[in-house]
Length: 211
Image (cartoon, rainbow, N blue to C red; front, side, top):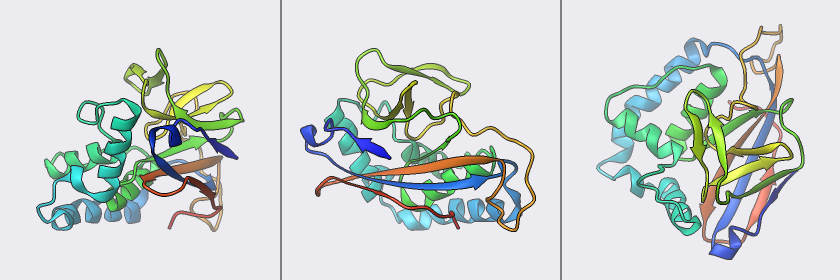
């Protein structure tokens, strides 16, 4: 169970939080995922049809939330926006592993920023809140990053930003486990996406598989 802090309603923000929990064999993405990523990247210019990325509904809502929380979205871009900008600039997509690549695919298709975390390393209870002064996290390959004003998932051992993997609870690659389900295997992972808009606050969770 993830509790949503009053930090958001106090600033006039509405949050809808969607979570998917699955057993995952972390490894290479495979040909089908590669093809889906390439197709999503190629389709992006037509989807934009001249609309600035920052004005896409999901991205614009996230940028408004950042401002309300005290963070400049032009300096700290939402992850989905940064990903789309990279693709639009012709820089292509990094391939990391099946979990991260699925996150990127969802972000490209929807404009929502997605985070995936290894449940074996998460320490309940979980709280979705605004990060306070002096809070940082150890980004993978980037060192300490300033979190103040950003929405974070915080567990009993510390905070983890929702859309970039945090080294303590990142999904590590491991040997696959034989299964008829390509997403079943080595770890239990939770994937979370956050939507900001203008209605009443709600939280929803569903169990299932990302298709």
